[in-house]
Image (cartoon, rainbow, N blue to C red; front, side):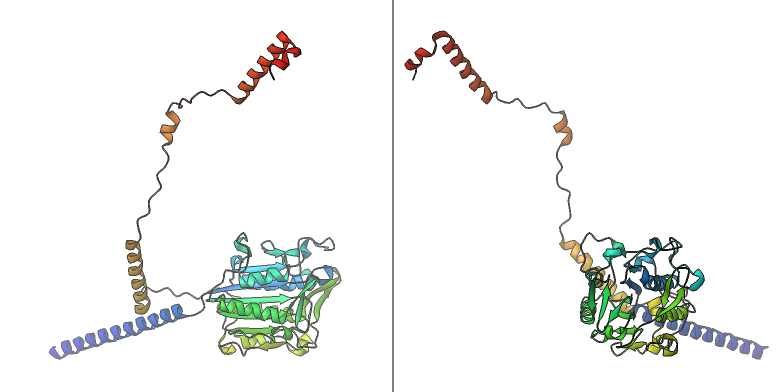
Length: 395
Protein backbone atom coordinates (compact mmCIF):
# COMPACT_ATOMS: atom_id res chain seq x y z
CA UNK A 1 0.00 0.00 0.00
CA UNK A 2 2.80 2.42 0.84
CA UNK A 3 4.49 1.70 -2.46
CA UNK A 4 1.23 2.33 -4.35
CA UNK A 5 0.61 5.64 -2.54
CA UNK A 6 4.13 6.85 -3.28
CA UNK A 7 3.77 5.94 -6.97
CA UNK A 8 0.44 7.77 -7.26
CA UNK A 9 1.88 10.84 -5.55
CA UNK A 10 4.86 10.82 -7.90
CA UNK A 11 2.57 10.52 -10.92
CA UNK A 12 0.46 13.44 -9.66
CA UNK A 13 3.52 15.61 -9.13
CA UNK A 14 4.86 14.71 -12.58
CA UNK A 15 1.53 15.54 -14.25
CA UNK A 16 1.37 18.88 -12.44
CA UNK A 17 4.91 19.76 -13.57
CA UNK A 18 4.08 18.82 -17.16
CA UNK A 19 0.89 20.91 -17.15
CA UNK A 20 2.69 23.92 -15.73
CA UNK A 21 5.50 23.63 -18.26
CA UNK A 22 3.03 23.22 -21.11
CA UNK A 23 1.04 26.22 -19.91
CA UNK A 24 4.16 28.37 -19.66
CA UNK A 25 5.25 27.35 -23.17
CA UNK A 26 1.78 28.14 -24.57
CA UNK A 27 1.68 31.50 -22.77
CA UNK A 28 5.14 32.42 -24.04
CA UNK A 29 4.09 31.47 -27.58
CA UNK A 30 1.00 33.70 -27.34
CA UNK A 31 3.10 36.56 -25.99
CA UNK A 32 5.56 36.16 -28.87
CA UNK A 33 2.69 36.32 -31.37
CA UNK A 34 1.25 39.40 -29.72
CA UNK A 35 4.61 41.19 -29.66
CA UNK A 36 5.17 40.31 -33.30
CA UNK A 37 1.75 41.76 -34.17
CA UNK A 38 2.37 45.07 -32.38
CA UNK A 39 5.88 45.40 -33.78
CA UNK A 40 4.67 44.83 -37.35
CA UNK A 41 4.97 47.80 -39.67
CA UNK A 42 1.65 47.02 -41.36
CA UNK A 43 -1.69 47.65 -39.71
CA UNK A 44 -4.08 48.90 -42.45
CA UNK A 45 -4.68 48.75 -46.21
CA UNK A 46 -5.72 51.41 -48.72
CA UNK A 47 -6.53 51.35 -52.45
CA UNK A 48 -6.42 54.11 -55.07
CA UNK A 49 -8.13 52.93 -58.26
CA UNK A 50 -7.93 55.23 -61.30
CA UNK A 51 -9.55 55.09 -64.74
CA UNK A 52 -8.11 57.94 -66.82
CA UNK A 53 -10.16 57.48 -70.06
CA UNK A 54 -13.50 58.88 -71.13
CA UNK A 55 -15.75 58.31 -74.20
CA UNK A 56 -17.83 55.23 -74.97
CA UNK A 57 -15.15 53.32 -76.90
CA UNK A 58 -13.06 53.24 -73.68
CA UNK A 59 -15.77 51.28 -71.87
CA UNK A 60 -13.24 48.57 -70.98
CA UNK A 61 -11.12 50.94 -68.89
CA UNK A 62 -14.07 51.76 -66.62
CA UNK A 63 -14.88 48.04 -66.39
CA UNK A 64 -11.23 47.31 -65.48
CA UNK A 65 -11.30 49.72 -62.57
CA UNK A 66 -14.71 48.68 -61.28
CA UNK A 67 -13.66 45.01 -61.40
CA UNK A 68 -10.61 45.70 -59.23
CA UNK A 69 -12.85 47.77 -56.93
CA UNK A 70 -15.22 44.81 -56.58
CA UNK A 71 -12.35 42.41 -55.79
CA UNK A 72 -10.71 44.54 -53.07
CA UNK A 73 -14.09 45.14 -51.41
CA UNK A 74 -14.82 41.42 -51.46
CA UNK A 75 -11.48 40.75 -49.75
CA UNK A 76 -12.18 43.20 -46.95
CA UNK A 77 -11.06 46.74 -47.85
CA UNK A 78 -14.00 49.05 -47.00
CA UNK A 79 -15.15 52.02 -49.05
CA UNK A 80 -13.70 54.34 -46.42
CA UNK A 81 -10.22 53.07 -47.43
CA UNK A 82 -10.79 53.17 -51.21
CA UNK A 83 -10.37 56.23 -53.43
CA UNK A 84 -12.19 55.49 -56.71
CA UNK A 85 -11.58 57.79 -59.67
CA UNK A 86 -13.63 57.25 -62.87
CA UNK A 87 -13.11 59.65 -65.77
CA UNK A 88 -16.46 58.76 -67.36
CA UNK A 89 -19.79 57.39 -66.21
CA UNK A 90 -20.47 54.48 -68.57
CA UNK A 91 -23.43 53.32 -66.48
CA UNK A 92 -25.37 56.47 -67.43
CA UNK A 93 -24.07 56.83 -70.99
CA UNK A 94 -26.98 57.15 -73.49
CA UNK A 95 -25.33 54.49 -75.69
CA UNK A 96 -25.49 51.92 -72.90
CA UNK A 97 -28.20 49.35 -73.80
CA UNK A 98 -28.44 48.40 -70.11
CA UNK A 99 -28.56 51.64 -68.11
CA UNK A 100 -27.01 51.71 -64.62
CA UNK A 101 -24.82 48.67 -65.40
CA UNK A 102 -21.22 48.01 -66.39
CA UNK A 103 -20.32 44.46 -67.43
CA UNK A 104 -16.91 42.83 -67.34
CA UNK A 105 -17.81 39.47 -68.89
CA UNK A 106 -19.42 38.67 -72.23
CA UNK A 107 -23.12 37.88 -72.45
CA UNK A 108 -23.60 40.34 -69.60
CA UNK A 109 -22.85 37.76 -66.93
CA UNK A 110 -21.29 40.01 -64.28
CA UNK A 111 -22.41 43.56 -63.48
CA UNK A 112 -19.47 45.23 -61.69
CA UNK A 113 -21.32 48.52 -61.15
CA UNK A 114 -23.69 47.00 -58.60
CA UNK A 115 -25.77 48.88 -56.08
CA UNK A 116 -23.05 50.02 -53.68
CA UNK A 117 -20.40 51.72 -55.81
CA UNK A 118 -19.02 54.89 -54.20
CA UNK A 119 -17.24 56.98 -56.84
CA UNK A 120 -15.09 59.62 -55.14
CA UNK A 121 -13.81 61.49 -58.23
CA UNK A 122 -15.83 61.38 -61.42
CA UNK A 123 -15.78 62.92 -64.89
CA UNK A 124 -13.75 66.14 -65.08
CA UNK A 125 -12.63 65.79 -61.46
CA UNK A 126 -10.23 63.07 -62.64
CA UNK A 127 -7.17 65.18 -63.44
CA UNK A 128 -3.43 64.83 -63.00
CA UNK A 129 -3.49 67.56 -60.36
CA UNK A 130 -6.22 65.91 -58.28
CA UNK A 131 -4.53 62.51 -58.54
CA UNK A 132 -1.20 63.87 -57.33
CA UNK A 133 -2.91 65.82 -54.56
CA UNK A 134 -4.63 62.66 -53.33
CA UNK A 135 -1.32 60.79 -53.22
CA UNK A 136 0.69 63.51 -51.50
CA UNK A 137 -2.08 64.79 -49.21
CA UNK A 138 -1.84 68.35 -50.57
CA UNK A 139 -5.58 68.93 -50.77
CA UNK A 140 -7.76 71.87 -49.66
CA UNK A 141 -9.06 71.74 -46.08
CA UNK A 142 -12.65 71.69 -47.38
CA UNK A 143 -12.12 68.36 -49.17
CA UNK A 144 -14.45 65.72 -47.68
CA UNK A 145 -13.03 62.69 -45.93
CA UNK A 146 -14.17 60.32 -48.69
CA UNK A 147 -11.85 62.09 -51.16
CA UNK A 148 -8.75 61.85 -48.96
CA UNK A 149 -6.05 59.20 -48.74
CA UNK A 150 -5.68 59.15 -44.95
CA UNK A 151 -2.81 56.66 -44.86
CA UNK A 152 0.19 56.59 -42.52
CA UNK A 153 3.56 54.88 -42.15
CA UNK A 154 1.83 51.57 -41.36
CA UNK A 155 -0.40 51.56 -44.45
CA UNK A 156 -0.03 49.20 -47.39
CA UNK A 157 -1.36 50.96 -50.48
CA UNK A 158 -2.56 49.44 -53.75
CA UNK A 159 -2.50 51.88 -56.68
CA UNK A 160 -4.16 50.62 -59.86
CA UNK A 161 -4.24 52.72 -63.05
CA UNK A 162 -5.66 52.02 -66.49
CA UNK A 163 -6.04 54.08 -69.64
CA UNK A 164 -4.16 55.03 -72.80
CA UNK A 165 -0.43 55.58 -72.48
CA UNK A 166 2.89 55.56 -74.24
CA UNK A 167 6.59 55.53 -73.49
CA UNK A 168 6.86 57.31 -70.16
CA UNK A 169 3.37 58.84 -69.91
CA UNK A 170 -0.30 58.06 -69.22
CA UNK A 171 -3.09 60.19 -70.69
CA UNK A 172 -5.83 61.73 -68.55
CA UNK A 173 -9.14 62.60 -70.26
CA UNK A 174 -7.39 62.78 -73.66
CA UNK A 175 -6.35 66.30 -72.68
CA UNK A 176 -3.32 66.00 -70.35
CA UNK A 177 -0.66 63.50 -69.33
CA UNK A 178 1.19 62.32 -66.25
CA UNK A 179 4.81 61.32 -66.81
CA UNK A 180 6.79 58.59 -65.10
CA UNK A 181 8.99 61.27 -63.51
CA UNK A 182 6.01 63.05 -61.96
CA UNK A 183 4.68 59.75 -60.64
CA UNK A 184 8.08 58.78 -59.18
CA UNK A 185 8.40 62.17 -57.45
CA UNK A 186 4.89 61.81 -56.00
CA UNK A 187 5.81 58.43 -54.51
CA UNK A 188 8.97 59.95 -53.05
CA UNK A 189 6.89 62.68 -51.39
CA UNK A 190 4.65 59.98 -49.95
CA UNK A 191 7.68 58.18 -48.53
CA UNK A 192 9.18 61.35 -47.07
CA UNK A 193 5.85 62.26 -45.48
CA UNK A 194 5.43 58.70 -44.11
CA UNK A 195 2.24 58.04 -46.04
CA UNK A 196 2.91 54.37 -46.72
CA UNK A 197 4.65 51.29 -45.37
CA UNK A 198 4.64 49.29 -48.62
CA UNK A 199 3.19 50.22 -52.00
CA UNK A 200 1.98 48.00 -54.85
CA UNK A 201 1.66 49.77 -58.21
CA UNK A 202 -0.26 48.07 -61.05
CA UNK A 203 -0.81 49.68 -64.44
CA UNK A 204 -2.67 48.34 -67.48
CA UNK A 205 -1.78 50.47 -70.50
CA UNK A 206 0.37 50.38 -73.61
CA UNK A 207 4.10 50.39 -72.78
CA UNK A 208 3.14 50.19 -69.10
CA UNK A 209 6.60 49.12 -67.91
CA UNK A 210 7.93 52.59 -68.82
CA UNK A 211 5.84 54.08 -66.00
CA UNK A 212 7.85 52.38 -63.24
CA UNK A 213 11.32 52.81 -64.75
CA UNK A 214 11.95 56.06 -62.84
CA UNK A 215 10.81 54.90 -59.39
CA UNK A 216 13.48 55.39 -56.73
CA UNK A 217 11.60 55.29 -53.41
CA UNK A 218 11.88 52.25 -51.10
CA UNK A 219 9.26 49.56 -50.51
CA UNK A 220 7.59 49.82 -53.93
CA UNK A 221 6.61 46.79 -55.99
CA UNK A 222 5.37 47.48 -59.53
CA UNK A 223 3.54 45.45 -62.18
CA UNK A 224 2.70 46.40 -65.76
CA UNK A 225 0.69 44.82 -68.56
CA UNK A 226 3.27 45.42 -71.31
CA UNK A 227 6.92 46.21 -71.94
CA UNK A 228 8.26 49.32 -73.66
CA UNK A 229 7.35 49.20 -77.34
CA UNK A 230 4.38 46.85 -76.81
CA UNK A 231 0.64 47.49 -76.86
CA UNK A 232 -1.71 46.31 -74.14
CA UNK A 233 -4.60 44.57 -75.88
CA UNK A 234 -8.32 44.43 -75.18
CA UNK A 235 -10.38 41.33 -74.51
CA UNK A 236 -13.94 40.00 -74.75
CA UNK A 237 -15.84 41.97 -77.42
CA UNK A 238 -19.57 42.11 -76.81
CA UNK A 239 -21.79 42.63 -79.91
CA UNK A 240 -24.76 43.74 -77.78
CA UNK A 241 -22.79 46.59 -76.22
CA UNK A 242 -20.60 47.19 -79.27
CA UNK A 243 -17.24 47.50 -77.47
CA UNK A 244 -14.62 45.35 -75.74
CA UNK A 245 -15.47 44.75 -72.10
CA UNK A 246 -12.00 44.49 -70.51
CA UNK A 247 -8.27 44.49 -71.16
CA UNK A 248 -6.48 41.17 -71.29
CA UNK A 249 -4.06 41.72 -68.44
CA UNK A 250 -6.69 42.93 -65.96
CA UNK A 251 -9.05 40.14 -67.02
CA UNK A 252 -6.55 37.41 -66.08
CA UNK A 253 -5.48 39.20 -62.89
CA UNK A 254 -9.11 39.34 -61.74
CA UNK A 255 -9.65 35.72 -62.74
CA UNK A 256 -6.75 34.92 -60.42
CA UNK A 257 -8.14 37.11 -57.61
CA UNK A 258 -11.51 35.33 -57.75
CA UNK A 259 -9.76 32.27 -56.28
CA UNK A 260 -8.34 34.27 -53.37
CA UNK A 261 -10.07 34.40 -49.98
CA UNK A 262 -9.14 36.49 -46.92
CA UNK A 263 -7.25 33.57 -45.33
CA UNK A 264 -5.38 32.65 -48.53
CA UNK A 265 -1.61 32.02 -48.40
CA UNK A 266 -1.03 32.84 -52.08
CA UNK A 267 1.99 35.10 -52.57
CA UNK A 268 3.02 37.80 -55.03
CA UNK A 269 5.16 35.41 -57.10
CA UNK A 270 1.93 33.66 -58.08
CA UNK A 271 0.50 36.99 -59.25
CA UNK A 272 3.52 37.55 -61.50
CA UNK A 273 2.67 34.39 -63.45
CA UNK A 274 -1.06 34.94 -64.05
CA UNK A 275 -0.82 36.35 -67.57
CA UNK A 276 1.97 34.87 -69.72
CA UNK A 277 2.57 36.19 -73.21
CA UNK A 278 0.56 33.33 -74.68
CA UNK A 279 -2.56 34.78 -73.01
CA UNK A 280 -1.83 38.51 -72.85
CA UNK A 281 -0.10 38.74 -76.28
CA UNK A 282 1.95 41.53 -74.69
CA UNK A 283 4.74 40.79 -72.19
CA UNK A 284 3.80 41.72 -68.61
CA UNK A 285 6.58 43.11 -66.45
CA UNK A 286 7.31 43.60 -62.78
CA UNK A 287 9.90 45.36 -60.66
CA UNK A 288 10.89 44.27 -57.15
CA UNK A 289 14.39 45.72 -56.60
CA UNK A 290 13.04 48.57 -54.45
CA UNK A 291 10.98 46.20 -52.31
CA UNK A 292 12.66 45.04 -49.10
CA UNK A 293 10.84 41.72 -48.67
CA UNK A 294 11.10 38.67 -50.88
CA UNK A 295 7.92 38.46 -53.06
CA UNK A 296 7.61 34.82 -52.00
CA UNK A 297 6.93 36.03 -48.46
CA UNK A 298 4.42 38.72 -49.47
CA UNK A 299 0.81 37.53 -49.35
CA UNK A 300 -1.69 38.75 -51.92
CA UNK A 301 -3.93 39.83 -49.05
CA UNK A 302 -1.19 42.17 -47.79
CA UNK A 303 -2.45 44.58 -50.48
CA UNK A 304 -5.76 43.28 -51.84
CA UNK A 305 -7.36 42.44 -48.49
CA UNK A 306 -7.89 43.97 -45.09
CA UNK A 307 -9.01 41.11 -42.87
CA UNK A 308 -6.74 39.75 -40.15
CA UNK A 309 -7.05 36.28 -38.68
CA UNK A 310 -8.05 36.68 -35.01
CA UNK A 311 -7.43 34.11 -32.31
CA UNK A 312 -9.33 34.62 -29.06
CA UNK A 313 -7.43 33.71 -25.90
CA UNK A 314 -8.17 33.94 -22.21
CA UNK A 315 -4.52 34.24 -21.26
CA UNK A 316 -3.22 37.47 -19.79
CA UNK A 317 -0.55 38.90 -22.06
CA UNK A 318 2.14 41.18 -20.65
CA UNK A 319 4.04 43.33 -23.12
CA UNK A 320 6.80 44.69 -20.93
CA UNK A 321 8.42 47.05 -23.39
CA UNK A 322 5.18 48.56 -24.62
CA UNK A 323 3.76 48.80 -21.08
CA UNK A 324 6.85 50.67 -19.89
CA UNK A 325 6.48 53.09 -22.77
CA UNK A 326 2.79 53.62 -21.96
CA UNK A 327 3.57 54.16 -18.28
CA UNK A 328 6.27 56.72 -19.01
CA UNK A 329 4.03 58.56 -21.46
CA UNK A 330 1.22 58.53 -18.88
CA UNK A 331 3.52 60.06 -16.25
CA UNK A 332 4.64 62.71 -18.71
CA UNK A 333 1.01 63.58 -19.47
CA UNK A 334 0.29 63.90 -15.75
CA UNK A 335 3.28 66.22 -15.31
CA UNK A 336 2.11 68.34 -18.22
CA UNK A 337 -1.37 68.58 -16.72
CA UNK A 338 0.07 69.75 -13.40
CA UNK A 339 2.21 72.40 -15.08
CA UNK A 340 -0.65 73.69 -17.19
CA UNK A 341 -2.97 76.25 -15.65
CA UNK A 342 -6.52 74.98 -15.17
CA UNK A 343 -8.85 76.10 -17.94
CA UNK A 344 -11.67 78.43 -16.94
CA UNK A 345 -14.63 79.84 -18.76
CA UNK A 346 -14.53 83.52 -19.54
CA UNK A 347 -16.90 85.64 -17.46
CA UNK A 348 -20.24 85.82 -19.19
CA UNK A 349 -22.29 89.00 -19.60
CA UNK A 350 -25.04 89.46 -16.93
CA UNK A 351 -27.84 88.87 -19.42
CA UNK A 352 -30.65 88.78 -16.84
CA UNK A 353 -29.62 92.14 -15.40
CA UNK A 354 -29.34 93.69 -18.83
CA UNK A 355 -32.84 92.54 -19.82
CA UNK A 356 -34.61 93.78 -16.66
CA UNK A 357 -32.78 97.04 -16.01
CA UNK A 358 -34.40 100.39 -16.92
CA UNK A 359 -33.01 102.30 -19.88
CA UNK A 360 -30.56 105.02 -18.97
CA UNK A 361 -31.82 108.59 -19.45
CA UNK A 362 -29.88 110.50 -22.04
CA UNK A 363 -29.14 114.24 -22.10
CA UNK A 364 -31.44 116.03 -24.57
CA UNK A 365 -29.82 117.70 -27.57
CA UNK A 366 -31.76 119.40 -30.33
CA UNK A 367 -31.47 117.57 -33.62
CA UNK A 368 -29.33 119.13 -36.30
CA UNK A 369 -32.31 119.77 -38.59
CA UNK A 370 -34.17 121.69 -35.88
CA UNK A 371 -31.70 124.60 -35.86
CA UNK A 372 -31.70 124.79 -39.65
CA UNK A 373 -35.52 124.82 -39.76
CA UNK A 374 -35.67 127.59 -37.13
CA UNK A 375 -33.39 129.84 -39.16
CA UNK A 376 -35.45 129.19 -42.30
CA UNK A 377 -38.64 130.23 -40.45
CA UNK A 378 -37.05 133.49 -39.20
CA UNK A 379 -35.93 134.39 -42.75
CA UNK A 380 -39.40 133.68 -44.22
CA UNK A 381 -41.10 135.91 -41.60
CA UNK A 382 -38.60 138.69 -42.28
CA UNK A 383 -39.20 138.61 -46.06
CA UNK A 384 -42.93 138.63 -45.64
CA UNK A 385 -42.85 141.60 -43.27
CA UNK A 386 -40.24 143.90 -44.79
CA UNK A 387 -39.66 142.62 -48.30
CA UNK A 388 -36.41 142.32 -50.21
CA UNK A 389 -35.72 146.07 -50.25
CA UNK A 390 -34.56 145.98 -46.63
CA UNK A 391 -31.91 143.28 -47.29
CA UNK A 392 -29.24 145.97 -47.60
CA UNK A 393 -29.70 146.80 -43.93
CA UNK A 394 -28.89 143.22 -42.97
CA UNK A 395 -25.79 142.55 -45.16
